[in-house]
Length: 320
Image 1 (cartoon, one colour):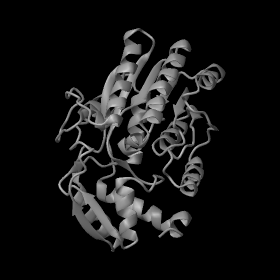
Image 2 (cartoon, helix red, strand yellow; image 1 turned 180 degrees about the horizontal axis):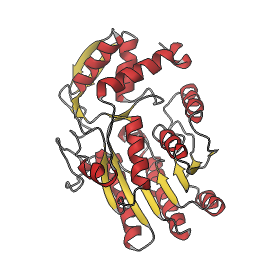
Image 3 (cartoon, rainbow, N blue to C red; image 1 turned 120 degrees about the vertical axis):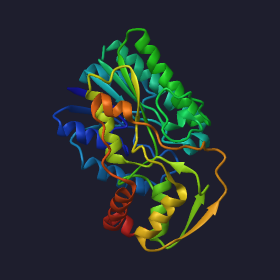
């Protein structure tokens, strides 16, 4: 099957492409290869080069806001399905440049939806976020009343509604994926687990904004496999799925785990970040039932894998 993956050279995306190719599918990748204005260029270049080693597909350096070039990808390669992962990655980045974020997450999405409609694709898979729920505690199912807090969550939720409306009009089937706190190898430093682990390895102080705040930490390969399963499943049509580990851990627990694994570092607990909602664990029963989603990697094992990767990385050896 021909599958177009936007953001296919990204953190989750390169794993998705790797898994799809392993199952015999042909992938075409659109990726702007951006650092979002904040990731150091040498780090970004290293990450993209290392991610590229894990798949065979060519990366087409296209900004999804460019409707003409996006359309050329569709008319040239005739994808049967689209997996849309390209996005501003989280609330902090959107807040720093909301106009740019809106262009990518709204205009870019509409360009892809219009091309998907015109080229009669079978299924459009949209990667949303647990941030669409707003504040929530454990065992939240997909029918929870979404009250997103902050521009990132609002834009992601708006994207869900746009995708659903194209299905309502008979354009194609869709799947919406809501991951949470994805971490692991080949991620950027400026994310919570990366910060904790690298600060601990450097013997620095880990800054915990809200010791009792919890997250449903999800290992990246588990999240990517969930995306692949939802894409290929006949049962997964016109539905929303939580794709997480479904087990919450406090930020303090995560920081202490990083210090324990690294064997160094200290912890400074501070007040909760008011820009972020309080979150717990998501219920994944629907994904288990419809396509056998079964996340394998628990948090401590995932943290240990990530620590091992940092220790063995030639790039990070020079930074630690």
